[in-house]
Image (tube, rainbow, N blue to C red; front, side):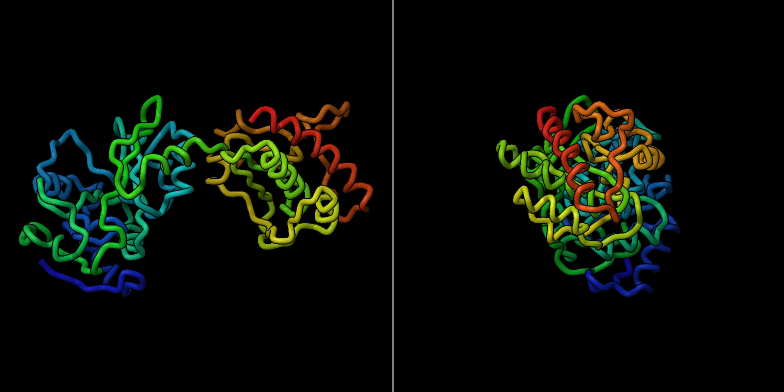
Length: 350
């Protein structure tokens, strides 16, 4: 068994490539993660999986959980992914959480994105998800440092990556979301209440064009209303369909919100992401333009997507809330009143 010692935060590229090459060649490689050391193999290599099953005394019909390096890989491996899964991924990935989901090519699939730079780079370089149970023979404790990992495995693995002690030293928590309800199968590094609170927390997403005015106003108003009503289990987000990020709220938005005692000086615009859409329980857009863009990105959110003006009791042939950028204060006041009325009705339904 060859050993390579690395810096876990800044591993050398040649060491990453050597580990990845071994994995692509069907070898068994001990790698560090944020929780414990694991024995990794290419999950698409059946011969390597067979060897791994022998070391772990794992029945053939009990698959290994897979390590991935990109959240977007989840859709390639799982189907019918619930909103709760995206909430947990957003909060705890990369990190010590394994999610059991309905599998695309199997009954279920276990997935995790570890919070360890060396592991993430090895997974990416290997080019496939890695089957990676803890690096210990069956019946032995999961190894939190390198020496524990290699004890008893000499001659059974081909390469071992030494990155010192694992950050956490305790196995990941395992949550089953393949059934009708959330089930915690193992309470590891994350505690039961952390997992349940995150999964239950609702998310409301406001979307406009540049995320500098309308969505900022809506977010500020909703956050104020939620605080006044004592609701603390709702997350409010805002984003834009444009690619500009880091911009301040417009002067008009700051002025109308200031009259309500709302300060958005710290706001910086951000672009909408697929993860943002998929974890949101309700998505509220200002115009059909944004509605179309959202559906292009994530057709599956259709039943959670609404035009914000639908919630305002205003008789108008158009359901668009026009963009006030470049308009005068009077125009900002007019769209502010529409947004405020809509938001007050939204509070009652979430």
